[in-house]
Image (cartoon, rainbow, N blue to C red; front, side, top):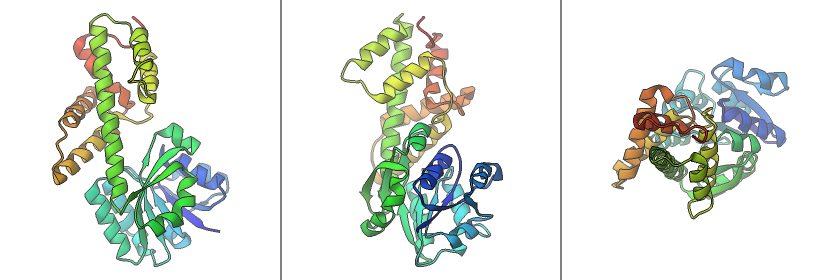
Length: 297
């Protein structure tokens, strides 16, 4: 039986790890804060005391942590992953990080003789719990196919995007589009409210026309209910738009709308909404226009 090591038991990582356990993989987990490990230990899942300990026991190591610095720390720290990688190990990097950070991590891993798969995921906590994240895999096709059953325990579908780095580029592509769309939707709703339009009426028009999509229907509903619980926080959306703009600068792709959306999320963070759901970008805009977007006033 394949042993999977899973590093990072946050809001996304924990349900992903539970899905691996449910799929029958021999699982060992690690998290920097041990309170996140406790539910797994209580359920009989093996818990490692360091990334090195986890990697020594695993055939495949999956890692989903907060940012590029955290990925580097997991790899390079004392008792880190690099100390235990060998030719028989595959390291699957699932965090949302920058392209240069992905390639740097890949170099560190492959220098040990291990294989590297770049596989961030698209989706939020709900799909993570349901096992319906979209897996965005970059790497040698044979290696991606080797780990596909593991990815498919967490993702549906798994898309092979190309070589290492293309999984990251695809994640930046989809989160760029997500941030631009959320920013535009928030502005449109504030525009409508400033003109006296009712929230229910605007949502009905959107949901029955060419612009109907799950993002607008779901976020329109949570905005109207005043529910900004963090499915995907403003802070994370700001980070991902910043990563996309950095990569765009490297390849010469103009992203004027994305730059504007990034500044809307930056303003929302400055207004104290960084830890709220990304839909809270509307709260800053609504405040500037002195309108209410909650309920159907």
